[in-house]
Length: 177
Image 1 (cartoon, rainbow, N blue to C red):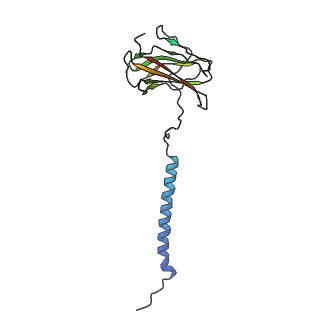
Image 2 (cartoon, rainbow, N blue to C red):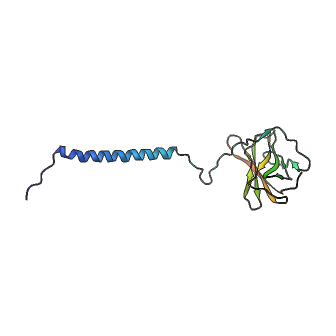
Image 3 (spheres, helix red, strand yellow):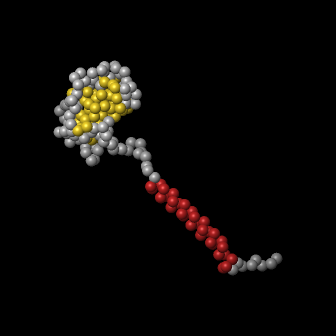
């Protein structure tokens, strides 16, 4: 048996170069994955608050509401804000006629959401600034007269979006005004 020959430093170099190359590629891939993960848009986690947008159809001023729609401004002592809405919500195709109003004297932003009797969201406004109103809310389906609905009015503190409270009104789709 012969003696094993010792490798010279020159013979060890190709193996070390391969290891350095493999490590460099693994490092580069890891950095790319981290960059992509940090830059990718994130979906809201369940329960995370996503600020609502302002309603593009909001109109400045106070609406002139036809008689018979039950337009009123329910208010009880202790409420943080005022609002006005039609109690006799009528339909025009899939549009619910609500004349949802955030009076100019409010300091809160408001929003209206319409639910069916099972608690499913049928449609909603965006945020309404003080001194604005929205005439219609687009629903995800047409509703027949007599269909029970809930109008949920929510108030938000400007800029922080902290809740200023909410009110739920039970009503039904009415006949034509």
